Length: 91
Image (cartoon, rainbow, N blue to C red; front, side):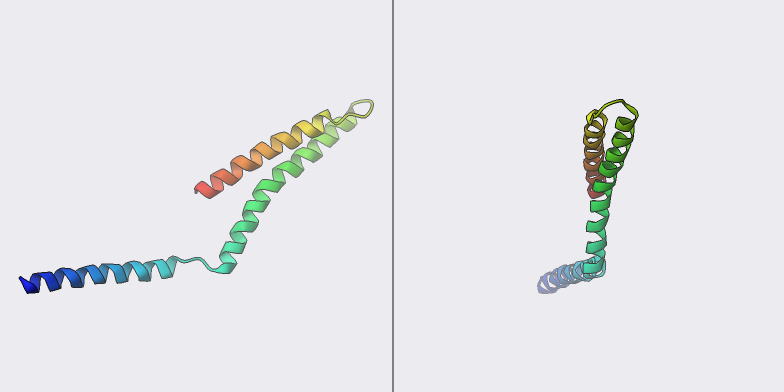
């Protein structure tokens, strides 16, 4: 009876030690986390900036001063950026 208990305890400790070793191997470094945060920023900002440029170009084609396309495409870029960040985090 005592041997069985000792064997189970040993196996349990062994499994926990393996989990600790695995988590230490898979832990990301500060450098990797910085790259990930930078990627999130780019994925968010690039569609907004692209939308602003596209909207500004379309507004320049129209006579008079108008910011209708610029604001519309900034909003579309913002939505696309949020979706991109969500998908990247979910991955």
